[in-house]
Amino acid sequence: MRLAPESLRAVETALAEYLKQPGHGDADFSARHQALPLHAGWTGTTYLTTSGEFWFRNFEYDPPRIESDLNESSKLVALIVAAERHPQLTVLLPSRPPDATTCAECDGKGQITIGNLSNIICGRCSGLGWLTSDGCLPTHVASYPSFEQALAKFRSFAAEQGREGQLAFLAAEHALLVGDQLFVTAEAISPLASVQREYARAVARRLGVAIGAVGKLPDGRLGVYVYGPNTENESERLMYPNGLKMMIPEQNVGVHLVGKAKMWLLRLRYKRRVAARTREYFR
Image (cartoon, rainbow, N blue to C red):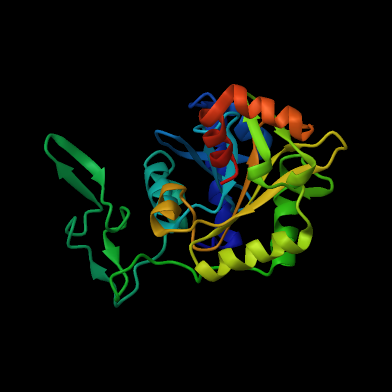
């Protein structure tokens, strides 16, 4: 979903309204990042920045992380929910084209009733009440930039969170996340060529691709990774868009370089539970 620059004035005015009477307990976050909370869900909150970027503040991770580029349905639902509180945001919603079809699931209302629950956002049309002529949501063409372009976008995204600096690509199989501390061996630091190949493989699958940060290394470099879902189910579970996704932990995680013997002892002590958490942290 691409937002016209002239329409972003609505986000600025809505944010100013929100900051006068903030909710969700995140006024500091909203003011610091100039990000309007649109919709608070079970796992996190969707925001829209005054520059037109959609972010998801994901509380399923510890520490929480900021993710970019939600899928189209999530963006539409968040805007529609937020427009009930901030009517000026309706200018950001797509206009119904002449050849659109009325959603049969909700009969064009955008909401459905299930049992005793009413006013539930329709999952078929994401609350719009209509679909395109081919029965789909209005969407933009999937964006898979080149590896170099993706890194440039990520560096810009990281800088917005105050995370400038050199990047070091890390591999999850040589890492272990214990509490808020990440332990890695020297083998975890991957050469750029292998990371570029991993990015290309993810792009070829067309299920989304992510560049995410995990924390600062002792030498000041920002530890990052590249990951692409292997199945459609995994892509949906992780809320990957059909394109590039970028993620930054809200708080810095300490990264410690350890030897193979220390890593073996850590794995022996914490066993599978921590290993599974580490794999999720790199996705």
